[in-house]
Amino acid sequence: MNLLGYFRSQRKKSASVAKERLQILVARERAQRDGPDYLPALQDELLEVIRKYVAVDQDAVHMQVDREGDCEILELNITLPEDDAPR
Amino acid sequence: MAKIVVVTSGKGGVGKTTTSAALATGLARAGHRTAVVDFDVGLRNLDLIMGCERRVVYDFVNVINGDANLNQALIRDKRVEGLYVLAASQTRDKDALTQEGVERVLDELSNDFDYVVCDSPAGIERGALMAMYFADDAIVVTNPEVSSVRDSDRVLGILASKTRRAEQGKDPVREHLLLSRYAPDRVNKGEMLSLEDVGEILSIDLLGVIPESQAVLNASNAGVPVILEDDSDAGQAYADAVDRFLGQERPLRFVDMPRKGFFGRLFGS
Ligand SMILES: Nc1ncnc2c1ncn2[C@@H]1O[C@H](COP(=O)(O)OP(=O)(O)O)[C@@H](O)[C@H]1O
Ligand SMILES: [Mg+2]
Image (tube, rainbow over all chains, first blue to last red; front, top):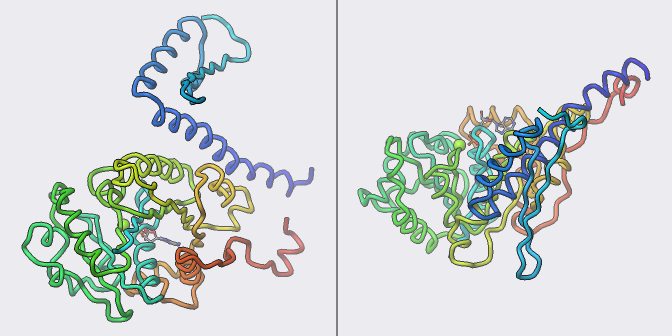
């Protein structure tokens, strides 16, 4: 890679980082506002429990409520760190 | 019955007042009787951008409180036929905008106008909620920048749940994205979220892209809505957006880098 290309690829990053961060944040906030009122509290408590066992990030727990017919599905995603070292 | 259009964003300083002035002026210029109402109680600015600050006698809150009637408070624009401004008050009392009061004034305006444009204050407090509550259409002004996009998404949530249309189970408020202060050269360098990025995240109809432009400051210095600066990039971009709002098709302009000169081609991407 030439020098110009190197700097350009460095710069490319900031907008795509912004996009990625926004996508995660917006998905999370939408799930919360469209979901039942207890969702944020449930999410916080789950995070607390998980953190007793694994050191995970603030956004490791992701919840979403989907509707299929008259059935509500609570989807729970927990992202564990790569080397899930216990505390 | 007028169509009520709110210009909103959540975040401050993104171009709501600039847009409200341009949109209202553009609608009036297209022959629609239009009133533009400043909901930014305590921080009124729309009168300055419209260039009628010295003619404000009565304001929105005076009309709500019955100190003046609408005819006394509406300021007729001297440049464009059928364009009127209702200024915000300088009062510090944010509770002055009661839901009943706002509804009464908007109802009265609806009888006499084709469009009522509501310039929302920043934030998601009372003034902003009142500006959104009665809307038929919402123009969500967004800058290609993380906090603005996030706030816009929150505002979309409010439009979908806390407006009269939502509460009464009517057709939802029609949402339009207006991406403003766009700098194609910075997008090309990967320093700024692109039109496509923002569109993908917010996924609402795109009404237009307004470039970052010197013309906006110049126009505001002079108290002229930038859409009246026919030769300027921002003025033309706003004119296109208004045409689209009225159902015409206009290709997007000012979203690509200016054509490169020799050196640009030599070293360019
Ligand atoms: N397209 C643009 N290019 C350059 N400056 C802009 C543009 N749009 C708005 N501005 C500037 O940004 C500032 C905030 O604009 P304003 O319309 O008052 O925003 P808001 O009402 O959302 O707070 C003003 O100084 C204005 O001149
Ligand atoms: Mg403003």
